[in-house]
Image (cartoon, rainbow, N blue to C red):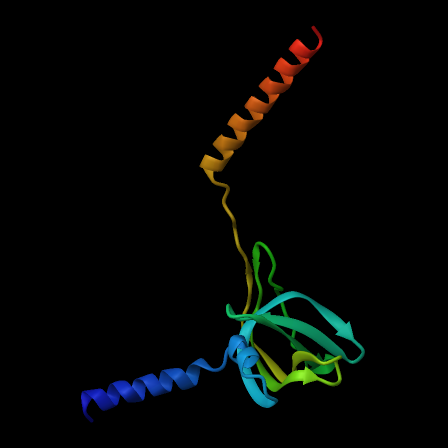
Length: 152
């Protein structure tokens, strides 16, 4: 096999394995069966016999409805300081769902947890602590000076 054909074959395989992004769904809205991966963000909301999960994939976020009995155990939900579980959702994308007030969503037939989330440590910058100390001392000095000269 020639080198150019190998490169083309490799690029084709990479593009097929990447899948579709939330941004692609939003830009080309049409009802279709999809498989998408993303991070679970926010808390799940119970809606009758379904959970509404929100997933984020660095291009956007979208709501995913899944039946209570089909929802896997999610360990971490993304928020500040927490990376949510990474999941793969298979289901039907609805650009204007009649069942949910015309909103864009995905009705999942299955969800698979690919990777557990984790807490993210956010270290405090020493520079910011120094600036905070200096500004605090300056504020106290200004309060002291104002009280001293305002009473005279």
